[in-house]
Amino acid sequence: MRSEFQLGITMKVSVGHLAIIMDGNGRWARLRGLPRTAGHKAGLNAVQGVMRACEPHQIRHLTLFAFSSENWRRPRKEVNLLMDLFVTTIKKELAELVKKNICLKFIGDIDAFELRLKQRIRQAEYETANNDGLHLNIAVNYGGRWDITQAAKKMAQRVQDGELQVDDINTDTFAGFLCLNEIPYPDLLIRTGGESRISNFLIWQLAYSELYFTDCLWPDFNADELAKAVDWYAGRQRRFGETPEQVSLGTGKSHA
Image 1: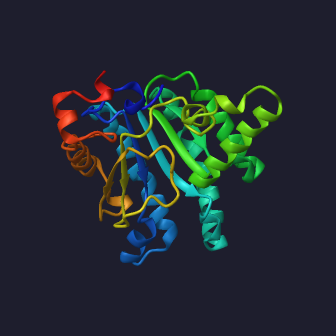
Image 2: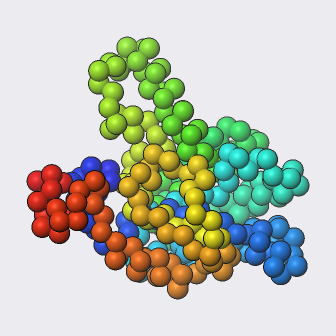
Image 3: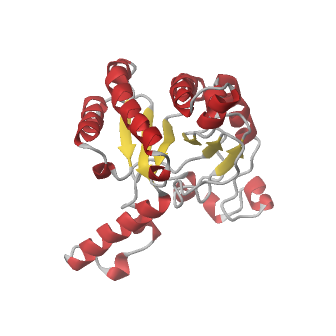
C-alpha cells in the first residue's frame, strides 16, 4: 500500500495513518514537582487513551515516536528506566493487545537493545501479527536518517548481489527498503509539547503529511485533543504540488 499521492488521490478527509511525536513528559512531571520518570509513566496512559480514540476517527495506522536514536544521550538513569518501562509494559499489555485485535510492530534499530527487551519485542510482534484491527507502530531507537541510511545499504547490497539494476532505482524502489514500507505514508503528524519540528522522525515518509503542533503536553493529550487535530486536518487542502485550482476543479494529473 502507498500514500494518497502515489495512488493519485489529492484529498482525503479521514486520517488513515496518524503519526505522533509524544513530547512533554518531562515538563509535565516538573510542573508537578515529580521526577521525569513519573511523566513517562503518565505518558503511557495517554497512549492507551489515544489508541481507544482512533476507532471513532477510523484511523487504521498509528505510529508513535517512543525513543529516538538521539535519546541515548539522556542521563543513564532515565534511559535505564525507559528500557525497564518498555519491557514491563510490553509484558503487561500484550494480552490486551491480542484481545483488542491490535497488530503491534516496532521500527528502529532493535539490535541495539539488550536481549531481554529484544525477546519481548519479537514475541509481541509474533503474537499480534495476524490481528487486523488498529496497526500500532512503535518507533524505538529510531531516526529518520538511520532509516534512510539502512535502506541505502540494503539497496546497495541488492545491486552488488546482482538482484537489482542501478537503472531500476527510483523513489518507489527506494521507499520499498524503508521502515513502514507496506502501509500508507502518514496523513497527519501531531507533535505535542509546544515544539515545531519533526526531530528526525520519518523524514522520508512525512514529505507530504500535514503537520499539527500543539502546546498540550503528552500526558494531557486525550480524545478531545485528538478530535481538535483531526478537525484541523479536515480543513486542509492537500495539493501534492498542484495548484489550489487544480485540486478544486479536479484537473490535475493526480485526478487522471
